[in-house]
Image (cartoon, rainbow over all chains, first blue to last red):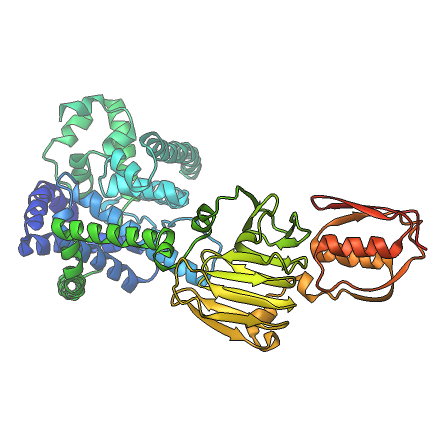
Length: 202
Length: 370
């Protein structure tokens, strides 16, 4: 049901945001409740430590309240929050890395795996197709996967994704396009294979 | 929703919220079902996009409402703690944000800085005498030599005295000494070897003190930016008094004998006599090569003597090596200035031996020794 809620409330975000800026504690709480679990889930796709992720998300909200006077008016709240969480986790990782003296400087890895809407699938053929597609999506490079996630599950615009991943618009667009393109090619191939198999069986 | 008629890619559908609602929640406010059936190629695309959505499910949150509520409470506590910390740091920041405070601080900083500069450049003049003032007092037409190199430099004066001037030091002296006094002015450090002439006492003016000698060797260390002046005597007798320009008490006259030294505290014009330089840590460590070298030679090859002189005065001596190969000398050159030392050596060698000196270049001409 979550998508529906989000759909109806996106408009309110900016109002709540502006009230928060004026010091409205209630607006803060509403925004918190609305986005918290989503942000935690997003954070969990980078870090396998749920408590640490929750800590980071709470820190993001803490800073938002404390520095509320300095907040920008014209933000897409959700994109802003997602981006803050990402940065926060990345920073905490970097700190840890310094301590661990690890050589890896690669930024965050999106470890999230998409799942399948089983309850919406009635027939076996569809199920097979969806399973295959799901596998292909989950095998994508982490950055492409994250772009897909942000675009189609968090409904960010390409612009916002580019900003979050610190790349330009064209690169973000390419990231998405490449992901879909290579998936479709793979998928088409495997589908015709499946169809062939089925036609042989029946 | 009319632009959906232009949808040609799966991406277009995936990004369409109402399409998502229809696929995932069977919420078909936009009549997607009907629209899809209008066109068969459209139906194919829609079916594909539907599969995509089904394959890209994000798991539902495993956080309950209570979890979120307690997280919110935890966050408020964090905020409280952070604001508490901020309050402690706040007054300083607030003070700094005050324009007046900034101005006052700026004035203070500028004031302190200029005070410091003043001290660095002019404060000496209050009680202390500087080299420049001393030179202005003299109207004999002085020659100034400055050692900007990193090695000591030898200066020969018209009376045959020599001064080994240390780096960052300068010496002013008349080209030719006239009258009954020989006066030179030092800033920095120099080792003096004065040719004997009781009729014409030799004076070294160094900052606030005047050193009077008849014929000796001694070192004076009088840098303009150092708090003390040092006089170290090697041979002979040296008399030191403060410059009358700054002091009326002419009566204080310090007499120094070999291996004695004097440290003059410029700030309060006090003389500290050091009766044994080997007992003084700083003096013992600051002796230069020339002070350490001995010039007592007993049956030493003359080439060896030249080498010692080269080391002591940092000069270069050219001499006919073959002709002077078998020449040995026994002589005492301890308190002689460099020209005197050379003269004595030449005389001892005899046989038309003479020397020429050009800066730090010395040429010995000889037909061999007796």
